[in-house]
Amino acid sequence: MPYNYPMKKKSLIIGDFLSLLITTLIGFLTHRESPVTGLPRFLATFIPLSAAWFLLAPWLGLFKQEITSNPKQLWRVPVAMLFGSPLAVTVRGAILTSDVKPIFVLVFGVTSALGLILWRGLYFLLKPKAHYER
Image (cartoon, rainbow, N blue to C red; front, side, top):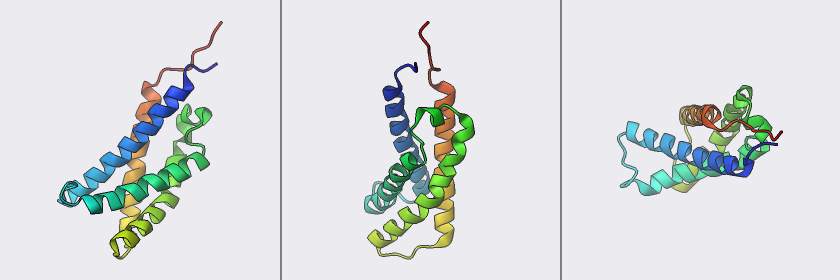
């Protein structure tokens, strides 16, 4: 019987949230934009991205123990972002009343997926292994 899976799931959700936050911050900083002075733009980017991720990730099983305990299942992360990034960027465009540029959708999706893959790979390496009672 796996040890304390609800806590692991909570850690995974918090880590996903922080990963998306960090990749969004990095995106702003690489464009020399301050997330503080540009808070409305930052939130218009981060909130739709997080919403898209947390809507699609469960659908792809990304919070199920049998998926999160198998590194071969990391392919599901970019698939979620393949669908999530166009949704997030479209919502962002509507909020900011700005155009949706295909290159932005691509870069946004790839960097978000990369951040999540790095986090989830680290999660897999560091999480306590399932522990069985004898």
